[in-house]
Amino acid sequence: MAREYDDDFVRGLEWMWGEGFLSPGGPAEVAAIIASTPVAGARVLDIGCGIGGVDIVLVADHGAGHVTAIDVEPALLDKARARVEALELGARIDCRLVEPGPLPFDDESFDVVFSKDSLIHVDDKSMIYAEMYRVLRAGGWIAIGDWLGGANAPSDAMRRWLDAVGLTFTLHPLDRVVETVKAAGFESVESVDRNDWYVGEMRHELATMEGGNFTRLVAAIGEDNARRRMESSTLKYEVVRGGELRPAHIRARKPG
Ligand SMILES: C[S@@+](CC[C@H](N)C(=O)[O-])C[C@H]1O[C@@H](n2cnc3c(N)ncnc32)[C@H](O)[C@@H]1O
Picture 1 (tube, rainbow, N blue to C red):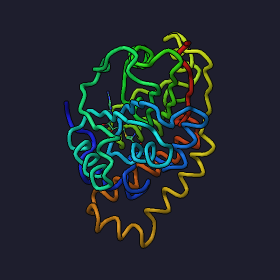
Picture 2: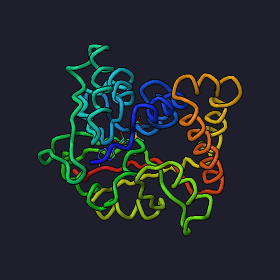
Picture 3: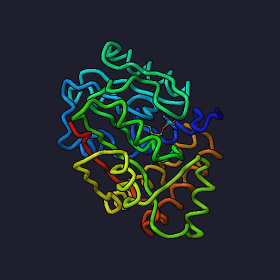
Picture 4: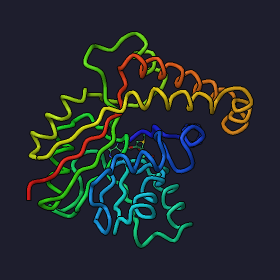
């Protein structure tokens, strides 16, 4: 498949969101997604691990027993593996390349399925939540952070942002995702809309690219990429404030 996260793009995202992260919020946001999910000692599947920062947090901060970290982009997995090896966590974190689609794991292989801001790339939400259900043991949990959409047709600003960001996204509104999760068989479904949090976070994100920071970003990824990064985040601020891009957390349990 075509590579969507090239090296300069990855450097730009880490610039805004911190080393090892291709999504906002860092370790605090990982902790908020997990909330009371029993991760300590658990066999965790992370769908869309990117460059591995999240997986290191799951093991080092939350005591996950073993993380199977999957992604569809080989170059991102190389970066994840290098980060994991540098911390000598290779026995606890297995970074694996997968094809988009059904999960290549046996039934009931995991205690927890985690994902942060990656399911936005999956078009068939019913398939992926049904697959999470299948690979979880009875009584296992999903702890998901994702970027969701608003209820209405995309505004002009939203269309311009989607065009500028240049990634393949399928955004469903939260009520639709909750229905999908329930239809897959999960119970105790809880969800948290993080739009207000991300409006505040966006101000910090823009500040990482302003003034002297912009000069340093240009030195890191070149002027064209830096300008694209700034344009994309400026448009994103508009759509987040307008409620059309809504990070959310979803937690649910497989009956057991
Ligand atoms: C926004 S990044 C988030 C990465 C990481 N979770 C983080 O928070 O830093 C989205 C990731 O999802 C991956 N991805 C896209 N489609 C996928 C799929 N079908 N299965 C697994 N990962 C996928 C992308 O390659 C990318 O690494």
